[in-house]
Image (cartoon, rainbow over all chains, first blue to last red; front, side, top):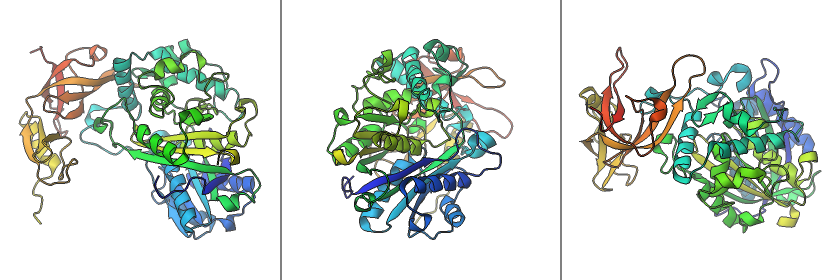
Length: 384
Length: 128
């Protein structure tokens, strides 16, 4: 993005809050605060150092107020941009801009959701749309299913290829002690699971869990004096193409094409230079669409690309190494967790699922119904 | 500034009550606009004309929703109308899984009854 300087800011602390099914009566702000506490411990900063606050949750209309009050801080810079699950990638770009301009010195990006405990219907109330609601789309699944139908029609993508995305995610999740899913999954099990919105069974769809977390950013200069090796922001890009699926221009091409190009241009990198790939997999078609639109394979070839374990552990391209929204956790707006995993991979903290010799990572966020796309490219000191 | 006397949705809905599928036309963009709005998303102009669709279109994307608890599976589709606009709808008069991308379809008004407003559905173009 024009105006942002490659490597001017870094992620210095990351943490998840409690995940999965949290204690009864925990609030989304409780989870944000817990994530912030843990992320501050991760980098050795204190709450009194935080003067930039960025957050989003579907469960609090003015989450910036709620979180600032809860933390007992009066931040110099606040941003509660909410554009769905990609919000946190937008926050990274906004935090970087604020840090560059000196609007704040330490920025916290936080998320929390208790959608599993209180029920998805209560956590994220759907707005009535007179042009869609009468047809009873089961959103968001139906919107992504429509995109999948189009991809299958145009490119011959199969249900088995979609299922391969879920199986790869599960294999990664089995290497992640923090993942929700603990049992192996086969292509046949994906295909025979309960149908949701054709071609998706429940195994093509992300989990419904609670969860939250925080990411702490500061200037590159300050980052170098902190506890862990800095993970630098090398590139950011964003694109909004629509809000409702009936207004998406082409269901087989997402805004990731534009957001990826912008992020690559800022980073001076291309897809061949990326060591770790973290893509927002709300549904199995997402991974295929984003692999294509971010340039890891040609348009239309995503289905065959993911077959035969290419994106699974021991495959050629490590994708969604935490197990993804499909098998690790998906508390409504998942984008923050992609940033957390990319950071941990670049710091080599990932144990059994660690990608060898990685210095660059892409964390791609998706929001709404393929509506908002935001790409962040991260790198170690060796990549700056 | 001229006050809007009737919302875009109210005009659209009034056409549906008469059995018509209405859309807007942007003379400056020379393009159809859907859903109806107060300004054109291609030019920013507030010059938008109402037109009535001939009601013929093609299935652009389709899915079958399987309700978790009760009720039969049903179709949800995106239809590209011949005038150049797309809308969400469903295709009736055939099994939901028999709806195919590329299928030619024709508009029919659906009146759910009670206080619920009429909405557009589609049927295969060759059927009566």
